[in-house]
Each structure stands twice: as C-alpha cells, then as structure tokens.
Length: 495
Image (cartoon, rainbow, N blue to C red; front, side):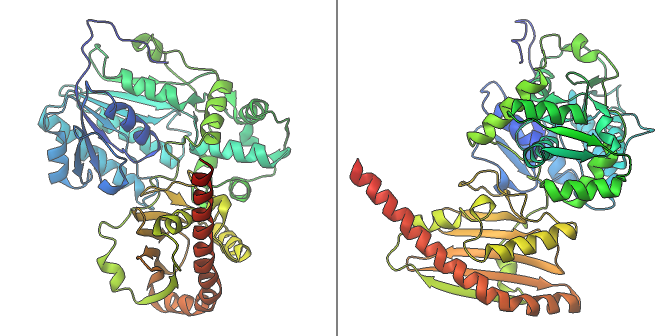
C-alpha cells in the first residue's frame, strides 16, 4: 500500500505516460487520470484503444519511432514513464528496443524532462533470456545520461495480478491439473510481487527527492515457481501435488504450457527460458528510497486477483498489446481480395439487443454455431504457435477496442452498430470479421487479404465451412438478441 507522502515533498505534476494500453500502463493510466493534481499526457499509437478519460488528459498519437510525435509529447514534461517493450514485435525486438530507448532518452534530455521512470525485469545478464537482457539494456540506455536526466529503473520479477501473464499461467495450471508433472525450472527462485504494489512504486517515484539515477529491485517473499503454484492452490481452496521430473526440455515445457494455459508457444518459450535463471532482489534500494511501501503477502495478491476475475473487474490483460490495429479500419476492407458477406433480417428485434448478442461471442459463450469446429481451429492454431481459443475474453459481456477475443482482437467498436474483429490466428494472409447492424438487418462480412498462392488456396479451402458456420452463427445471434429483448421486457414488466 502507498502511504501518504510527507507534506514538504512536492510531487512532479506534468506527467507523460507511454505504454498506456499495456498491462501495467493501462492500470497506471487510470490512477494518474483520476488524480486532479496530475497534468497527464499520453503517447499512444492507437488513440481508440484508450478508455474514456477526463478532458484534462492530453493524448498524442504516435510512437517512440515517430520523432515528431515524440518531440511533441515530451514538451513541458517533468516526469516520463517508459513502459514500452517490443516483445511481440518479431525477431528484431532487441534492435527495436534499443532504438526506441535511445530516441526516448534523447527527446527527454532535449526537452528538459527531469525524470524517467522505467519498469524492467529482475535477473542477471549472464543467465537472463534474450528478452530479459533486452529489458536490462533498455534500462541501461535510459540511465545513460545521469548528467542531464534522472532515471529510476524499477526491476520486478513475477507480477501477480488478474490478467498478468505469470498469474494466468499459474491459475490455469492449478485449476486444471490436480497432479502436475513439472520440469526442473519449477525449483527456480523468484520474488513475486502484487500488481498493486508495482503500481504503488511507480506512483511513489513522483515524490522521490533523492538525486541521481537508481536501479531499484522490487519484490516480495522469495519463492520457487512450484511453491507459487501450491500457494495459489491453497488460496483458491484447491489441494495440488507436484511431481518434478528431469526429462522435460525447455521446448517440451513450452508445449506443456500451451496445452493448459492461454499463452501461445512463442510467449511460453520466452517465459520458460526466463524461468531457468533466478530472478531475485539484489539491492535494498526499495526500502531505502520508498520506506512507506510494504508489499502484501503472496496469498493476498492471489486472492485479490481472483476476486477481480470473479467480480469482472479485470482492468488489463497480458494480451492487451498483442498486435497492432490498423489506424483506419474502413477503407482497406472495401478493397479486400476476398469477401464473404451475409445478411440476416432482424425481424423486428431491436439493434441494441442484437448488438448485445454480437458482443457476447467468444470465450466461454462460444461462437453460437459449430463450436466443435471452432475448437478444432483453435487447437490447430495453438499447435502452429498461435493464440488459439484459450485466450478467451477479459470480460464475459463487455468489449472495448484492443481487447483480445480468443484468436481475434477488437479492431473497432461502435455501440449498437459495428463490431470489427481482426484475426490473430496463424494463417497465410490477413483477415477480419465484421458485424454491422442496420435498422433492419445484421450484416456479417469476412474480409481476407491472401499472401501468395497458399493464401488463396486457404480461402477456397475454408469457404465451404463459412457456409456452415457463418450462416448458423448469424441466425443464432438474431435468436439470442430476441431472447435478450424478451428477458428485458419481462424484467421491466416485473418492475
């Protein structure tokens, strides 16, 4: 919990937040935006992915690779939060991280920004995974101008919170496997920390009065990954057993994770590689610089995360930043090489009720038709290294732009009118699925840009399944909308 700062400490007021649509960034955004004492500016690639914000929050659309936008974003700023990494941006992520960090620190120095706050990862360079080493290098770059700007580099290990990668993996394993046959890396030590404690440290950086650049390790009690799984089971009221075996290689471990958790192979492999080395606190600066913060016990962080899931209060998820949305989702779709459009008469059902049915698709609700085929396609996608269907949804009913939805992401959302889903499954091309509501009809359209011959062959192979799946889906959505409308009428009649 964050204690009140001393009266004489004047917090930095003009704040820039980057990474505001990511897991930590979105949560920090809501806290900063809700503080009337903060003059907040946000640098974001896609403005539509932001939640509703107070008018006083300024938004600059762009990225750290667009120097004009970056220069505008840092003007007049006291403190800049750097919560960016390129983990999902391909094989050249290290160079992208490097360029981004250099651009950012150079822009901040030129604009006279007083402090940069960065969240990286615990670990030692000699045993760290490539992704963790890249985060360490990012911290070093951001701290490379101590004569011109102060940098506070927080380093955290496993973050426990609703929707975090680590917690989703642990939760799914504990829920699905009473007996877990595990590899050796479950004995690796780490120091997990609750997401609310991470946010408390990031917020407290506004009040810090010490001079100089600091690397601040943050974490709670030291535990192994296996101990975390058992403790999570206890917090959830589940008794679990772990059998450790030495024969599971990192590659086999990654496949083991993708079978029982929502993460795709690429992310699973990265996490397994990182879990092979210890990620423990190596300095005491968190207590020296932020003595007012006491991290909560692991079990309490788990209970808080579970409560948020059960109460549908999940603010952000690990997959929030997976994949970039197109800036203009309309014009290119009209020129798609292949289109499959179907129309269904509303038969007097209100557009609002049908739209509620549309936005309930995916996750535990399924896809209204031939769910066995959807699950089969999801399994194929998982085995091919994609997300599959197990990623599910953040909320069982509500959607927002940028939300992941099984192996789709929400690219556009206009209440009672339009839902556009952008495909994130493995396929030889780019695909979208649009639901458009008029006064009289639901129009459902699949758009597809193929990649070469294989992309065209793929379209013709799946087209017969469209006739089965999409036709029944459209009719089922109308029926569900009618049911929703009838239930609402009965409820009003009861009142």
